[in-house]
Image (cartoon, rainbow, N blue to C red; front, side, top):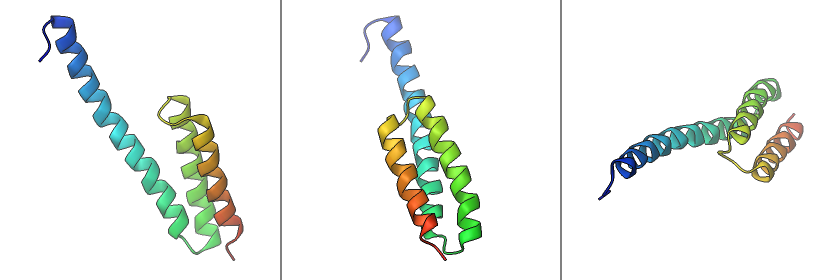
Length: 84
């Protein structure tokens, strides 16, 4: 248990941030999964645009490392290009 007021606040803040980051990471995975499961090229391109945009946003906020983001985007684009 925290011994100081500042440590209590720190614990509250980290718990809140952890939940927010979990939600954001989950959304990113969901968007990625939707692109990978889509078989229609037109629909996949629309989903790809949303997914790439969201991945970029999360990279800027520091949720994902920039190389990890680049690898994910690359595999998504490769998948969409191989459709149809």
